[in-house]
Image (cartoon, rainbow, N blue to C red; front, top):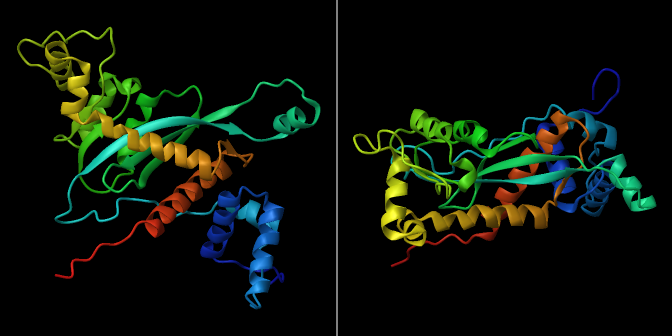
Length: 273
C-alpha cells in the first residue's frame, strides 16, 4: 500500500495480468475480472489490479527481453531468421465498422520479428509504422540478439546494401542469405572483388534459383513464417492498445508469452544410457 492507501503491485503481477489479457484477447476490465476469479477459486487473499492500473502500468512496464537462451561461452552461433507482418490497430473505427457497417480506412503497424532457427524462439522484435521498410530494421533486430550470429536469412525485401552492411558491421563472419531480385545485376567489382551478393547471383546463374535455395538453406525461413502464423492464431492480428508505449509493451508481452508456450510444449531429452 502507498501512503494514499493505493495498492502497489510488482512488475511480475502486472506482467502476469497482461499475459492473460494477450493470450485470451481480453479488454482490461475483462482481464481484471478473470484474475479476480482465478484468485477466488484458489482461495487466496490477494489484491487484484484494476483495469486502470493495468492500463497505466502497461505504458511503463519493462518486459524481460527474450535474448538467446543458451548464449554464452561455447554456445553455437545463431541462425537468425527475419520477417514482418501487419497488425491492425483496434479502436473506434473497428467498432463503427462492426456496429454500423461504416466504411473506414484501417490503420496498422508493421511487426518485425527475428527468430532463432535452432529453437524457434523469438529473439528480437520491433514495431514500426507501415511506411518503414523491412531492410531498415535489420540493424535494430541484430542489436537485440545476444551472442554470435552465423547467418541472417530474410526474403527479397532485405536485398539491399544496407542489410549486408548492418550484418557485416555486427557479425563480420555471418552469412547473409537473401535472394537477389529478378532484376539484380552484379556489382562493379564482381570480377575482381566479388561481394556475398555477387556470389549468390553467380550460383543462381550457374545452377538455378532452386539449387541456390537448397545450397544456402534458404528454405528454413519457413520457420519464421510459421512463427508469424502462430502469433496470428494465438495472439491475433490486431493491437488493442491505443498509445505507442502501450503497443510496444503489448508486443513485448506477446513475445514473452509465445516463447514461454514454446518452452512448456517442448520436451527435454536426457541420455540415460
